[in-house]
Image 1 (spheres, helix red, strand yellow):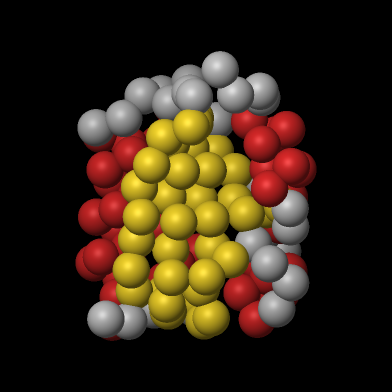
Image 2: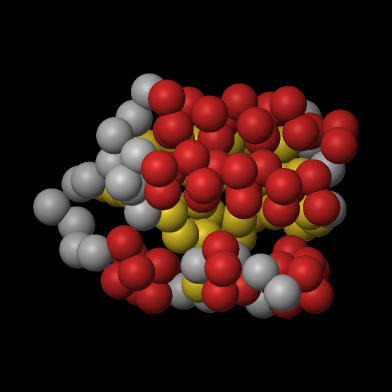
Length: 116
């Protein structure tokens, strides 16, 4: 499997942790997982990309769409991303601030508020 996902909740935060690659070939799996937190959950959303070794513009597209839909629902969204190629993609695309990309769990949690 090129992309694995783990969905869990910590307090009022829904955590989606991905492992693998996010590209055109795994786009459906990525979109489905993001859709689950949009449609079936009610908490703030933290997407953990620290286990992702590669991501192309397909991933950015789905993340922007997810953030927009969550914002319309009055929910917060943040990304957790380790230094490396995926963080470089966000930097190159100029999306670090817009998407709320954080390099540490503490910073991402702080951006979403405190755990219940």
